[in-house]
Image (cartoon, rainbow, N blue to C red; front, side, top):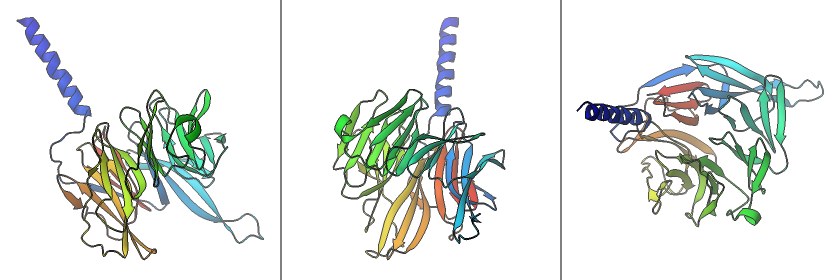
Length: 337
């Protein structure tokens, strides 16, 4: 009898432990928003393994050359912990996207180069291709970059390895977006060609002729699925779910868009602990006016009205471990639970 009781108790504890770390399928509560406003101008947001936000800022300074009228762009990287913004690195060159590996090492794109940022300075790790479009860090602490025309480059402690059309059978050597799912499979989107995937053990498979629209963003779902953000001059298909079967259209209907003058783009996606799908949707009107709105899916699509209409969302990230969602505008970080 005691053995049966002990076995049942262990089973209950294991189930509770698993549920604690898994996204739930129950309806989520209404979002509660906390606002943190800064003086700096921020353009990029990423999370470290603990879920802490890291922010990249830009500042325009006069050139040291008295004969030059050009402004110098200076980047800085901050870490937001315990409701405090701390400066980590400053006087950096103009950067693109950046990631934090499992050892809190900062890696960033600098035009055609992959750089590593340390307390002693900036080290160029790879610079042998075109402009780098995307950067990832996998569960083994490998860095993946996608220089234009080169394919996918894996950077590890042993050097680098290239996956391209000729040697690996990927769909294209040009990548528009990339992401990693929960099985450590790397997904690489190609603008009008499809999707290439590289598994944890290096096997390549492809999803050709994915859809007749431009592919702008990939983001992992709450299992081994992937969400793809698209863009076109209609709102029929701008967000799809890619799993084991055919792609499923999850697109919200945007009532305030006037077609065909407005082009809708999904420019960022995140899935939080409650399985809410968050999307940043850009309205491009007559190729000039851009408006960005934040939507979330909680049983049905809703626009988050808690943020100011004039706020320009530049990045969103979900910290599933701590059940927090972050949205970054140029001078404000929103923490949403």
